[in-house]
Length: 278
Length: 337
Image (cartoon, rainbow over all chains, first blue to last red; front, side, top):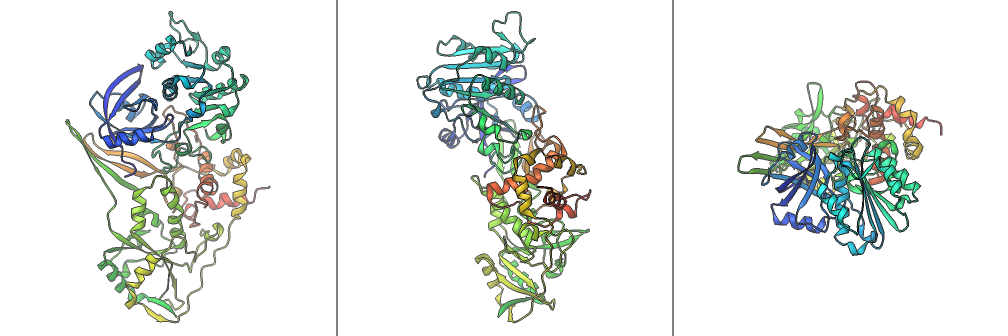
């Protein structure tokens, strides 16, 4: 039936930041895994659940180049995420999806890539980043701009280290003023400011931008000042969802159903939506 | 010559249908509330209601739909998928607006991912509609391009005879024809006059409404803030609507046993669109009312080519603060353009 989820076994849990965890999940049934392998593309989302508590919507944080497992990263906040944060390896949780559209990364081939993420929005960006880095030869320069409120709030710290060490990735890290620690070596400032200072070239470049609404707003303005056209900027919108398949009636922004026509949109598409509904 | 179903033969039809495995649903008035319930005989039915308070939609998309039963133990989680019963049903005495509502919702439940709960019941049901010979001040089918005799969503149309003894039978679909062929011995072939249809005045110009809603500047118009001031966000209009389809999914039970359910939800409720972060895209009653009107007369049309309103008027008739869609749409048709 349409709303039946796949049972998933927890392989491991990793704490990313205070209240933020990543679960690595494996499929219990081979047919579910096969379905996922055939359908998952980077940018798609799912409903993660646990019986007795319910389901929550977040992205698939793992890339389309690695489909053995599903990874999801979430902030512990309500009833479902609070329970998911307390599972142990071997526990059974559920996944429904993958749903929605995707980042068209084959259209990005031969171009420079600029990834910009704020706080807990690195997970959806990370799926695209690894999908591209796993086929590194297809893309030109890769720049990642990532910021969080404080040093502690940065997620995927071990991967940030990996990206920092790579000579084929330019990583620009920042924390909000006041969020730095005494030994912090990177930038201090809000993402839009640091982005403008880093001044990546808009020529032949695709930008992927994920973050809270307020960051998106100011970063889009910064990108425009840098010369990026809204058609070359991609983002992913996250609204409250229950069904994930265009029926439960809440995720629309104007006439656009985020779950079916999104969650991935260009900045040009987002600007065409009624802004007061975002 | 047309086929006639006399009221005194209705019991025979009910028996035949029930013997063939159908459950027969009809408007039944209980405690001042009319709703579609299973009936055993014609006298159980309240066919003289202009419109029952609750719609026939309730029987296809129930207020709460059990989907998965779960049982959690130390060793494992057992789940059991729950599906609607296989029972076939005859929905007798539906009004044209309610029947149309079902057809309006079909594409929503069917696009891309098919909602089997809805379609199993749709496929197992025959809609027997009775044309309206009476209406009230809230009926507005003619305003949304339907009428007291529109056949949208109906398998059979019954037209009341002017002598009050029965109905003229007009079958619309193969399914409806089969249902009445099965009771042909109880039908008579005679010439009879049908009663005059209800006269439902056109209450607003839907073309003008659609035109105004489609104008991008209308979205942020002050109009919404003024018109929705009275709304208390109770959601009655959405729960009584023959086309409203929004729902929530919730696990209800205790730590070890429970049921995952699809429950009605409403765009009128403040937490309907509330993000985990606390951000709420539709954080005032006026933005929620705008969503409701836009959804029905602009967005739905853009997706499925039809307005999500069949003109039953319940939203206005039952509104505790005397608001409703009719007043809003009248106000929109009167806006300067």
